[in-house]
Image (cartoon, rainbow, N blue to C red; front, side):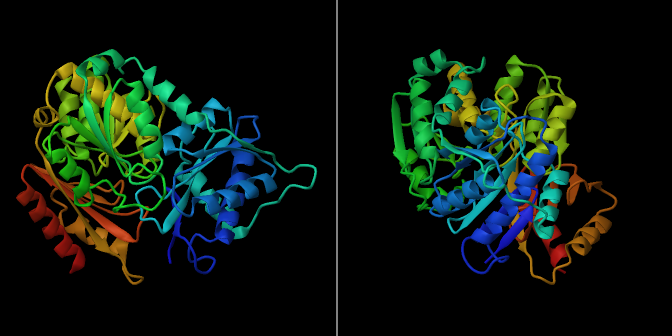
Length: 459
């Protein structure tokens, strides 16, 4: 059993003893603490909180506990049902709510669930607010409403359609060009909410031929839900049979987007943002942002347009903060997370799909040809599993000291920049591991850099 409390929300496995997993008691405690914070800091006069969830098997249980707790705290609940993370984020501002909770453990396996906590802008709580939620929960500093002040419950499942309308209204989404291109598209939605909303989006974009894989929202994931190449053999085989132009793969809450070329090869999740940024920058000059663990290719594409690239700490809230600070026109994360402020400040696979198809239609290239037009980098993603005795700070300090003659960034873990590559070590916000990402011009060099640093960390 595991319970992880971080900037990314409260994430845990279902079952077990309270405090050791995401049990009903833990859900009540953290939701109560969140409601207490919202009442204290929200500038919106609304008393409404949005609740949306992915299709996990545990989702219905968690939904009932969350909604009941919020009502017990005196908040009115709008339950938007099975909904993507970006849909829930948009629903907060569309409804004029003072906050929102997304019930999803993102790419984690089906035994996990989580509470992702949103502010009045439909954006994730910042680090200070997140820490305050944890403090309130630990101290149990919350008071429940009396009989006359209990919240009300409303169900409203119209926000998926409203989300699609928001995407279609974006100036750079060229529905006519997509329709004329007559794309044949495949999708893998890993048995979650993408299976509901992606077909609707594609049809509205004018895509007539859609091959669906694992689109039934049962929550019984047919493969590991993280959209990485090692987990996507089925849809890659589907593409290798020919006759399709591109495949889109999303995680259970639809905020990450991976793509597969017409020949069955991976487009590369790092290049989702790079490609969309190229299209946006071609029409909208401005700065870009990604996190420290993302590919250098975004920097290269940004400089091609004479603009400036900025790096942030890992975590969507950190990327968004930096984007606002430098007035970026596009940003996101190398895990396939596209953040386009014209839509909203949240990772959104629907926005990514619509902009990518617009770009592909304008370029008139095959998907593999478009991918080949970008700077070539290879990334290795490794991990160091933690034990209760692991001294993470000591590991990072040792690595930093050994590479003190290189360009070192310690804003988030330790990143070492070399002339032709980099290595980034940081403690995960979602798993008990140290993530070790490396990138270079060849896979061999990326692998060598990772092994070199991992050997030092493990010594």
